[in-house]
Image 1: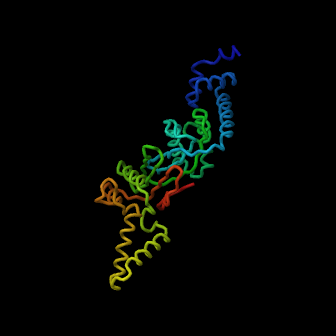
Image 2: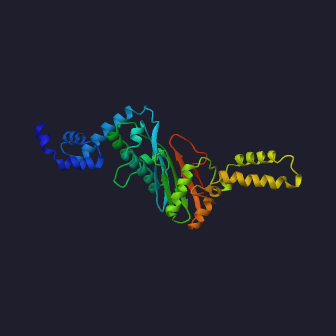
Length: 287
């Protein structure tokens, strides 16, 4: 054992640590067990932490954050869950969530199980990344869901990590696209990107209520009253017709137009919640 320990250099430990982000002592012990073979030590660590991760699999993952990644190819949101808020606010957990979203964009895979088998740029699979992160954070981690949209994109995650949004556009949206993502993240009622994207049942119910409210008015103006009420309803529920939160004198669609792009799709995730229109638009994908 003494000879094996002498063979393990600080450089070897640091090399393994840079690949896993694990504690120095964990890396050193694995290298000792692997007689200095870094690849074998990595396998030992992942087997050890994968087993421990399985033992904790039944633990509730009530906390978490939304990971986001946006590029000229598209954008993705990933809901990554953990056990405690302490881990959810950890910078390494944030980076992991964002990297998973990046893997979703780059691979085009939106199925959670399939994405876990996908490889990242550093050669690790997403599942191996989760196992390595477990070794650091010691909590049950679960990839809950994914959404991906196509086209030049922008993304935003609220400072608490609990709400994230992304938009895909007809042209590179720049900071104006990020501002629209902030609007989406702060807005409760978004039923569709455009009028035609809204569920027909919701529209029918809104129209029924508008007609009910117009009862007793002169017959010749009832239709006009109903259409006026529907225009107001759409302005509340349709993204491009909503007053822009940063300047309510214009709509979201007008804000995009001023910056020379149109919105083609959007996505919104909240940790532990389901939005009525989490992914909307013609170019979209979700798990």
